[in-house]
Image 1: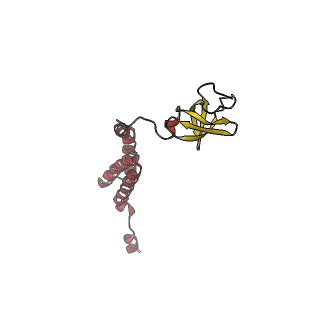
Image 2: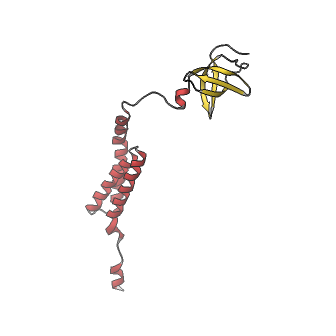
Image 3: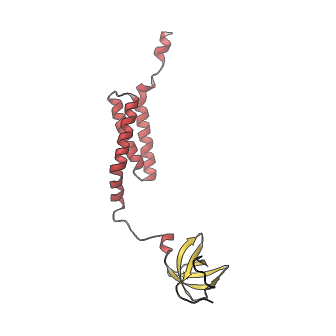
Length: 163
């Protein structure tokens, strides 16, 4: 009976392996996300691994890892994000670049919609914004994009060219 107890593996003796695996998983996730969150958690886990190597109980290791990770998330991560985004292109792109863009009506915009050509050369199906309670907008009228809903530009007339 005594030999059976001696053969039971104490998992606490191998906790350092669990720390290393957790750190490796966090680093791999960080490489996929590039937001510095999992990097800070991995660095905090190094504190837990260090506590393990110093012989601290398992709960002290977890507290040390959590405290260090939170400290890094609140202090170092914002600085790294600011440095990474410094000098970035502030020009809006995709849908954000279309909001406020002008254009001309190609096919009159009525209740069933219409067609507009935007200043960037793109042709979009269009409908009037709900705030624009006027009649249909005739071909050739100037418009301004207020929103994009799916593949439809929501527009308001820039001038009074309505039918």
